[in-house]
Image 1 (cartoon, rainbow, N blue to C red):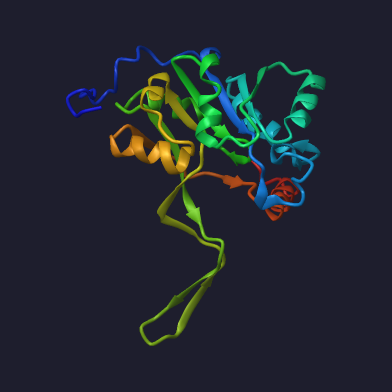
Image 2: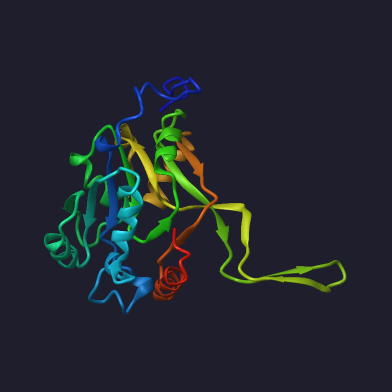
Amino acid sequence: MSATDRPSTASGPDRGSVPAKEDIKVVILCGGRGTRAYPYTEHMPKPMLPVNGQPIVMHVMRIYAAQGFRNFVLSLGYRKEVIIDYFDRKHLDWNVELVDTGDDTDTAGRILGCRDVLGETFMATYSDGLADIDIGRLLAFHHSHPGLVTVTSVPLVSQYGTLDIDAAGCIRAFREKPTLREFWINAGFFVFDRTVFDHWSGSNLERDVLPALSAQGLVYAHRSDGFFKSMDTYKDQQDIEALHAAGKLP
């Protein structure tokens, strides 16, 4: 897309009004192999790892459902039969579509594989990230700018403790896993315009699609400074369980 083709108004492209919540579908990426959580994911897909006795993906869905977004598309792959069986037996007030996008498909392909069931505006997220995101505010922000994609960003929490050291080498303070507010990371919780598929190229969302779209000025960041925690490893699962037990999950 050339500079002359891009919308010039600060209020964003002519998308019309912000769509109603019931018209928005949320794609949840549930097909990865979860290799960093091995061996716990050898027989169980990572979206089904439990938090307080329920799969993590159910907690992700509740973030949206509690705010009125109740149309979900689960993009399946590895160990899809476990997820299909769970939702076949689950009676929910939400609409849940299960789409098999292939065992070895990468993240970009998992969204692209759901294209036929998506509307003019849709959301997407990972199946293992919990946050206190205001989804309505995120959607309104998306409709305020001229891009085709909104990425929710959160400040980076260091996995290590850091040291404050003065010029003489004296340690003045120890900081245990501080929040590094000068660095912002991708937390998922995306909003897309359907026309993004006209520019979709590559197999990986984070390495291929988003950088290419960003180079065209089509990706904007919605900053969230609240709670965020992802379940990348089994230790993360234990940490989230401990947060839940302490009443610290949003």
